[in-house]
Structures are given as structure tokens and as C-alpha cells.
Image (tube, rainbow, N blue to C red; front, side, top):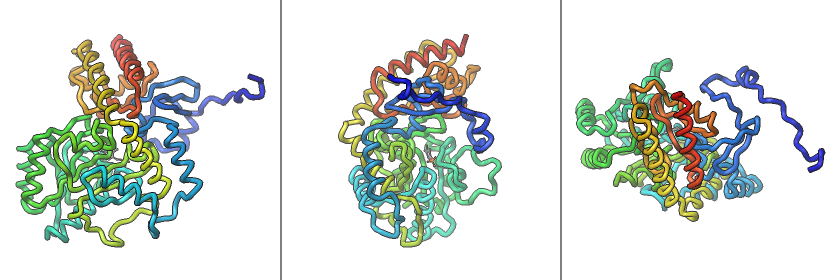
Length: 413
Ligand SMILES: *Cc1c(COP(=O)(O)O)cnc(C)c1O
């Protein structure tokens, strides 16, 4: 290589300058990510990491995947945004794919998970007023849930830490215990005919990687059918193939009336969607909208991500790699019984659950893994979450497991 083709030495990343201008809404880890390829990332010093965060369960096809590069390039050359005043072929094509690959009939597009849940909350309320004759509807969601950061979705989120500082919160929400049928009935009985919908994650992601219980969800489905309430599933994290099935609800043997998706849908390009059954398709023109929602760039990219999941048989991959990851983590758990309580999850969303009486926190382990060259993300104080790209390879899982083991040995030294 000649001198001229060498990249100019870059100045070291200025963390203090970043903090001077960007709001401190995150407790950021002190590395600056510069580029990515597949399941690997490189920081501003050139150091390589295995990425088992995937933009928080988002980069379905990893980084710089040829399908995404081609989809985004194609569409940016043709048309990127015009609003929903007109018919958009790319939006129609993605809606058709989602309907043909789910239990739903109609789709509304937006840009994020919180917005998709916000749309579902509004749809359920209109359905309550118009079809159920409830003037003061209540939506039940679960303790330890996570549904987003808008005012309505932090209210639906059953974790006080996301709500404190932001009162007054919207009314019309209350909480049920997750996977506890008796607890659900006792809350339902307090409201009787005011409950219009139950909003749940098929697997609680942020709340600690806690899979839903089949019997609980099937019982709730029956109660909803008997009483006319809607069952809304937040598939923002567990959906789009991450669980080893395309939708988390397929692991529970039920179908929701409404479900939401976002994170993995665009493979890391921002897009969200709410999908509903025909019976609750009650929005009329003017009821709800989003300027950017369903723009051609997002929809074309998401469609190519969706098609790749099917074409490359990624669901079988997720099941095999998920099982490999689960077994490897279970082996590590057995090696550190005083610190690790259990491993739980579905497919490629797995949680390493620390014992309450261990001095270690999830953040300690994440920190220690960064030093080993592995990126992970906590799900609460005591759970370390593993959500690699769905294209992760067997050798990469083995390498990640080695690094987790090393980081535990180091953290406990
Ligand atoms: C991340 C997440 C959301 C919020 O999605 P945003 O795109 O950050 O608004 C909602 N629900 C669940 C289950 C999530 O994991």
C-alpha cells in the first residue's frame, strides 16, 4: 500500500465534547462505535467486538448486510418520502407481507415501538367507545412490562422507575401480575365491565427476559373471547423471528386481536407497525396519523428484511443457534451456582439471571464483557440479555460464550 492510500490518522474520539452537546438520557458505556459488518463492530480506536446487542434486538441481519445496502440504495434513488396523502406501493407491499405472515388483517405504520403501542391504545379505546359501549375504558397491562417512553406507554409500562418524575399520567390503565391467573382475575373483578383490552408482551424483554406461560395466555384469550375484551400483544422485541417463530404469540398457542412490531422489522432502519384483526379495524380517516410512518424507504427496507427471514430460512437458524446459546449459558450457570440462578428465553433472546444474593449486577457483567470484546445489554438489574443478529453463526456463539465465562472469572477475581 502506498502512503497516499493510507487513511489519515483520526483524532481520538472526544467523549467530553459529546457529553457537552448530547443530553444525558443514557448511562453510556465509554466506547464510540465507528463501523460494523455482520455480527462484529469496531470502535473509534479500531478495537473489534462481537455484537450480541444488535442495536437492542433490532439489527435482524447484522451490520452492513448486502440485502439492506441494496434495499436502501434502490429506494433512495427512486423515492424516499412523500407522506400518506397518496398511495405508496412499497407500503402496500409490506402490509400485504405482514398480513399474509400473521393472524392480522390490517396494518398501520409508524416509526417506533412506542408509537405502535400508542396506536394500539388509541384503537382499543375507540373500539371500546364504539363497539363495546364503554365510556370510561381501562386497559390492563402487566407489572415488569415495557411498552415505550411516550406518556401513554410509560403509563402502560408496569414499572414505577419509568413513571416517576412524569406525573400526572393519563388515566385508564391498571396492572396485573404476569403469568399469574388468579392475580389477573382479582384485578379484572375490580373493574368488571370497564376493561376494554389487555396489553402484554408474549415474552417480557426489558423486564428481565421472562417468557409468557402458555396456560396463562390461553386462559386470558378465553376470558377476552367471553367478555369481548381485546387481547393486544406487544411483539416489538420478541417478534420478527427472534423467538424462533416469526411472532412470539406462536409460542403461546394463541392469536391476539392486535399486535405491534418495530425493533427487528426494519433490521435497524426505523419503522413500527400495528397489525389488527378485521373486527377491530375501527380507525376512520383523521383518527390517527404519522407524517413519516410507512414511508417508502422504511417499508421497502423492512420488506426485504422480512423476505430474507423466509428466503434464508432464518427461523430454523434462530432455533438452532438459540439452543446452542441456551445450552452454553446453562453450562456457565452450572459453573457459577453462587452467582447465576437460571437461563431463560426463547430462540435468540436469552437472559442470564443473576442470584439476588450475588454481589454482581448485570451492568458489572456487561462492563466486564466489553473488556473481553463482547457487547451485551442488561434487562433490569439482575438479568444479562443476549440478543445477537438472527444471522449469528455457530462459531460466533462459541466465541461469545468463551468471553462470558472469561468475564465472569475476571469480575469475580
Ligand atoms: C423497545 C420496546 C418498545 C419501545 O420501542 P421504541 O422503538 O424504543 O419506542 C416497546 N415495547 C417493547 C416490548 C420493547 O422492547
